[in-house]
Image (cartoon, rainbow, N blue to C red; front, side):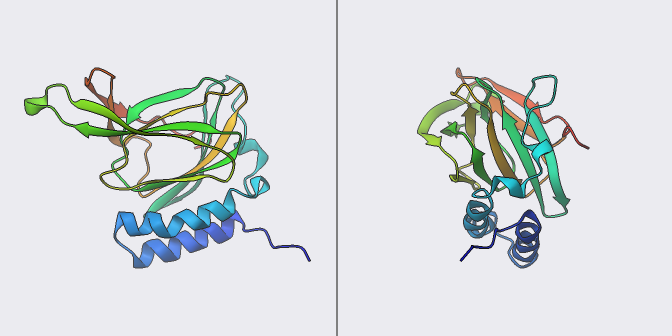
Length: 187
């Protein structure tokens, strides 16, 4: 007997229900994580044009669904691609569809009077296909690195649209810099 595939449309409907009744970012992320785990088991749930990098060879960032209380995006990391320590200013859930990604979580203690922060590695994970990572308030500063020689495809779900959202990134020495995410490739 064949099992039914959990679709992107079903995932979005479930997200809509959850975010319309729940206000806690941590609670939303906890409820969304197992659903994203179901979705990423079925790579074909995401159209193929959103599972590859653009012709420029840069990282692929595609909006799959934009709603007032959440966004669903596909991110394609090329071999060696990185994103240094950064925050999100919202809850998030990330699931790996294809290949793997290394995620480093940080504890950040802001410096006095805007000085350098103390940035400490809290955990390092190597997420493979089907893995899900939660970003919740107080535990959402991380770095990503595709340490493999193949593209890695992920689904990212956030409580805010990151395009244009003022955020922060931290250098290894604790220097804080502003981070504004670019637009998505398909919108």
